[in-house]
Amino acid sequence: MHWTTDRTPPSVEPVVITKTRSPIRSSVGLKAVMAVTGILVVLFLIVHMLGNLKIFTGETSFDHYAHWLRDIGTPLLPHTWYLWIQRAVLTVALVAHIVAATVLARRARAARPVKYAHRKKVQGSYAARTMRWGGVIILLFVIYHILDLTTGHLNPQGDASNPYGNVVADFAPERWYVTLFYTLAIVTVGFHVRHGAFSAFRSLGQQTPQGERRARAAALVLAVALCGGYLVVPFAVLTGLVS
Ligand code: HEM
Image 1 (spheres, protein in one colour):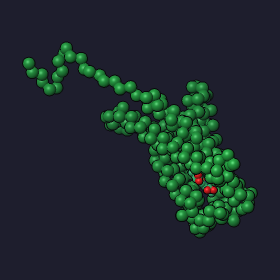
Image 2 (cartoon, protein in one colour):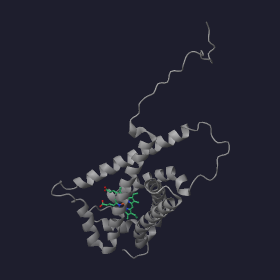
Image 3 (cartoon, protein in one colour):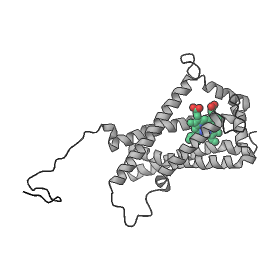
Image 4 (cartoon, helix red, strand yellow):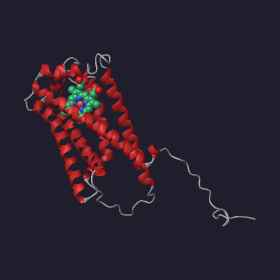
């Protein structure tokens, strides 16, 4: 007996092979990965911003702070070990954040194989729509920033013993384009954090319109505080307040 290729015999049930997926690879698991890694990076961002503000306490104090960073954990840990552990944790967090975001985005796309004939123009807030590109800009910025102020390769002074001088040389008025680039990147960080924090606060808080309003406000306050705290440093150098 023949079956045409596009038909299955009525008596044969399709065989469904179900693979068991580890809970972390479920969409809820991946969202949890995004939240935990996002929180780690935001904690770093808050501490790093507060540390940067020490620039207003003067050159000796700022350089002392930067050298102290290398001594955190001593004598329990050897010199610079804490910094390297932090770097490893942040790198793993960043990679996991990006991988989880990519897998979730692919799944969302696969769930709708047929594109909308007319894609709706309005899809959530501006921050929500720019998460992917925002993430790419932030990643490129972090690479540039490390080569600039950590290794010194892209810094006009690049003296590891004088981070204060490196920051002042970096944002000198004639290098206004560096301040412009930092401003763009920091505002992008602000949008990214605002949306990420809003999603996290909304999930954690009350699922009511009032809870959502509170989550939105808290995320905005966090993002504005971070942006302001970071931007004040290059603009203080640009305007000669820090020199
Ligand atoms: C105008 C704003 C900023 C200033 C003035 C600044 C300043 C600095 C300085 C001076 C260092 C070197 C610290 C040291 O090695 O002693 C550094 C490292 C670093 N910054 Fe920033 N930063 C700014 C914004 C940011 C932002 C927005 C991010 C993340 C999105 C960021 C991420 C990092 C990272 C990952 C390092 C490397 C830390 C390490 O050596 O382990 N920074 N920053």
